Length: 149
Picture 1 (tube, one colour):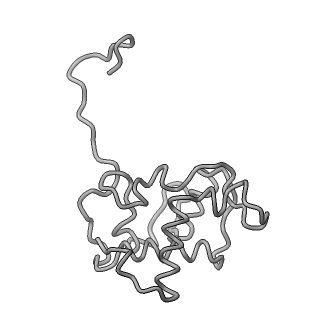
Picture 2 (tube, rainbow, N blue to C red):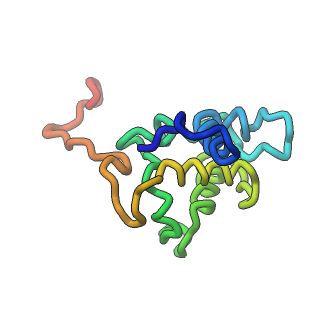
C-alpha cells in the first residue's frame, strides 16, 4: 500500500492528505457543526472512518485500497452503473444522513484523489486480499441470550 507521508507537499499531495482528513474527521470538515453552512454535507457527527477503518486502509475493515479501478460499477440499489463520486454520495445521503457533494466540490475531489492514491499500482479489475468485511465463523451451537454468542 502506498505511504501518504512519502507524497510531496505539492497540490496533489495536499489534496490526497485532505481526502484522508475528510475520511478520518468528516464531522470536522463537512459535518453539521461546520461554521460555513454551504460546507455542511453530513447530517450527523460520524466520520467515514467509522465504517472504513483506519482511514480505509485496514484489511477486512471495508478498505478503500484497490477500489478506484472498479468504477464505474453496477449498483443493484440504483439498477445502473455508478461512478466513484456517486458511491461517495450514496454514503453521504444514506450513512451520513446528509446531502450529496457537488461532483466538482473540493471535498469530493479530495476524497476521490485519496481513494485513487490508495489504489496506486493496482491494475483495474484486480481483487486484493482483505477487501470487504471478511467472514465470521458460524457458531456450532445455539446462541444463548443470557451469555451472548
